Amino acid sequence: MTPPQREIRAFFGPETIRVYQAYSSAIADPALKAQTFVSPPFSMSRMTWIKPSFLWMMYRAGWGKKDAGQERILAIDVTHEGFAWAMENSCPSHPDDESSHEEWRAALDRSPVRVQWDPERDLLHRPLEYRSIQIGLSGDAVRRYVSEWIVRITDVTEISNFIHGVVESGDLDKAALYLPRERPYSVGMDRRRYLHAERQRLLDTSHEDHEEIIRLLQEYPENESVPYLREVIQLKPALAYQQHDDYGAFYKKCLWALQDIGTPDALFAIKQCALSDDSALRTQAEY
Image (cartoon, rainbow, N blue to C red; front, top):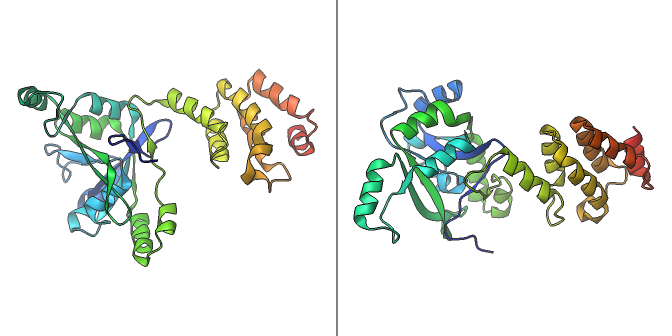
C-alpha cells in the first residue's frame, strides 16, 4: 500500500526521533565528541536542515560522496518534545493553497522553522509517489536544537557506505535489509504513547518483532505491560516463525520481562505459568 502523500516516517523510540544531517569532518568530529554541535565550526546563524528519511539524506548527500562538505553522515536522536516544538513553530517554505500569499509571508517572518515536502527516494534515488519531510531550523530553533533537543549523535557514514556498495552490486533486496526501520510518526509522540502502541503491536501476529517488543517492555518495566505479556505467552503457538522453539526460549524472554517488572500482578502471572499444562512454559516459570 502506498503511504499517504505527506506523512512523517522516521526511526524512533520511547524517548527520541532520529533525523539525519551530512557535514564535513571539521564539523562532524567535534559534534561526535561533544554529542552536540560545536560553534564554531558549526554555524548558529545559518539555517540547518534536518531530515527524518535516511534515503532522502542519501539522495541529498550522494551517499556521502557528493562533496567534502557532506562526507560524514550523522544520525541525530532528538527528543520528541523538541521535534514537536519545531513542528508547532513551523511554516511552509513555499505558499500553499490554505492561505493567501500575504498570510504565508507573515507566518514566514515570525516562524523560526521551515517545512517542505520533497519526493521520497528509493535505493536508486528515483523519486517515489509520496513525499518526505525536510525541516529547516533557524534562530531560536537552532539554539534549542543544539542546547536542548539533541540526545545522541552517531556517525553512520560506514554503514551508509556499506549499503551504497551493496546497491552498486545490484542486490537491492540485500541493501534494503540494512536500512533503518522507518515507520509513520505522530507529532506529539512521547514514552507513554510509544509504549502503548508497542503493547498493542505485541499482540499482532502479522510481524516478527515480538521478541524486540518484549525486550522493550523489560527495559521500561511498567505494570501496564503485564496483561500483554500474559496474552502473548498464550499467543506464542500461533506465531508461525516461533514453531522451531521447542524449549521455551520465547517463554523465557516473557518471564524475565515479568520478573523485571516485579509487581504483584507480574509475579502472580509467573506463578500461574508454573501451573501450565505446557511443559516448556511450566519449566521456565518454575525456574
